[in-house]
Length: 221
Length: 162
Image (tube, rainbow over all chains, first blue to last red):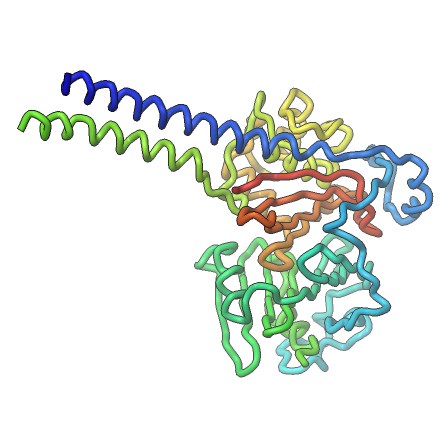
């Protein structure tokens, strides 16, 4: 009797574990798979929301889709009423005048400010400035978002796992910290205060000094 | 003594079962694409729809066609094209090397937001955002939007972790 019981218990345990594994795996896959069908076709809004002339080179065979309504958790931010701390005039500046900069004026590869965009994504407000580089192909992106990650140390811990430790450098100052990713493929400089999380990013071909110079233009107070 | 012997037999089996359960139940994806699974012909789900959105944002919208989360022949052709133009072996399967290439085009704006912008597309970008779901879990969403103006055209979920 005892022998039978042990066998039955073992068999039931294994079967239950396998059933639970398969159930949870299926649940995860279904969740990952079904939540992506969230499109609506509001064709009337197309011309109101897209300036087609802003879409460069539409002749390259890309499909133009109609605009849909944004979900509640990701709305546009009113930039007029936002305290913007990132520099928006980099293209007009002489980079040699940037504080603590080691780059010369001839190194300003920032050709123009393409766009400034604000997003209110439920957790925080985010402002992104897109700069076109002189090569006409690549961009420098400068952004600010609220630090919702548990202060400076919390934000550092949250951002660190996203980078290869070999490319990472962290510098701590009195009221802020800087996290640097310096790789041949891309570069990021994150300036973190208690209140804000700033980013300056570019392709890896750009001089890190230029990114650091730009980061010095961010208003930290 | 007899019971101990049986326990010695049962324990490893239960341990292995528990490990399998843990790995499937708590498959730990992060926003870092190096943790994402390989997707290829026949794959479905959020990772495929995110891939398709990024292919749109790489200028391959007409090759991919509809973003439906199903890795069909059109997506495979688009992946092969992406791999060829990015110096990768064009095998049509998206594993660590191809995910790493996609990663090279993304800017990390904050620990929870990213934007994928590739000069191959003059029209689209993919914005990513990680949200708490209010019940202790996390949901990672993608948003395909116009590169200039940021108007949204399609969105979905990459993964959901309870």
